[in-house]
Image (cartoon, rainbow, N blue to C red):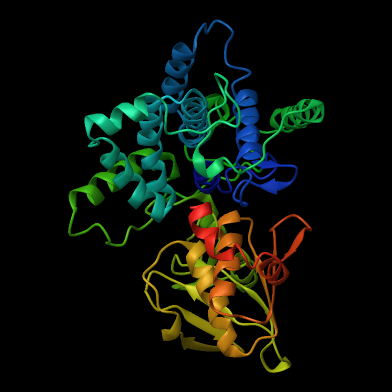
Amino acid sequence: MLQTQTVEALSADTERQVPLSTEGQSIEAGKKFPQNYRALRIVKEELLRDIPKQVDCHTDRMVLLEERTSRSRTVKLWLDNLVIPTLIIMLFVRAEREAGWPLNLLSVKQMIPYFFAAGHINYARYGLYYLRSMGRLSAVVQMQFLLGNHVMRHQPAIWNGIWSDMFIETTFMDLHRIRADYEHRTKLRARIKIAIDPLDPHDHAAGIINIVTGRIATDNMTVDQSVTIGQQGMVEFESSWPEGFHNTISKKVITMSTMKKYIKVGTNQVYDANLMYSGVIGLQSSRDISMKVMMMMIDVLRPPLCASKLVVTAPDAVPFEICNGVELQRVDLRTTHKEADVIIVQQVVKLAEDGVSSVKVICDDNDVFVLLIYYYAQAHLTYGLIMCGTSSRRVIDTKATTEKHATIVDQLLPAQF
């Protein structure tokens, strides 16, 4: 799932009328890996549709595209940040289905520079650690992986392996999905035809262009060099081990979306407050809005004195809170944990001390739901707690769920993780 979000983060604002989405939902939204993977695959296939017919194999096609990157930064951007990452995802899925351990390590190795480039800090840090750790397994343990014992199957078959954390997720393929594929592909093809061909350098300006509006990026955009920048970041980070393992990893790739964050007034950067506020509904794909902070917001129903509070989790261990125009340091929320799943639950539990009557958590992650139930019971909370997705209308009464399954709540964490 994270690799699909990485594609959207690096492709930000290179297209606007050719959205990377499924049924109107952005790729960055939650547990939608099958749909997002499908969307990327369709986009990739349509972009490559007009590659000259004399190209007989995948290798020749990639050689042709690599030659075009020397003539256009836009071609390089789309090839490195959409086409190749989609092929890596396909390789990763194949490794999962076939229980192919060497193929899995190869696909993960190819993903990691993109995590560094897109600023996905946790996956960059621990993904690289995972890769190096798996390369040092004992011969006995490694043999179990090579035998395919690292995947699970709902029923015995050849091409249906699945990672353990995805085992509980439901996927399906039916006639409706096949028909939807055709309809979405047809609409996408029509949109691509009226846009500038991102893989044909003949109509491209010297700089990076938006294929729909024709807007040319400023010279400081570096998104077409994302793979090189990501590889450099990976090497620098690994060279600091072990002392520098927890050092800050910064995002150095500048995407076209950066131009939309602020305008220059004299020597000052003036930010769009509405854009910043809307960004706190979920984790922003670019994660560089105002001081490159990661923002999140829990919608809390409070007394009229303070209708809502905004808690901003920045690189510092102590987050700060904005309420009625006043900024406060929330020392009580201090944490060195980097996972948003854990931080969300920590803040939900802490809200009990503020005297709230009800809390709504907006999130698509099943892990967050399990953690909420477990810690709601452990902390003996009593206020109303509901959870809803970022795009669906389904609302889950977490409080009622906890009370109904009180006898098994204590066993949820080992069962889930």
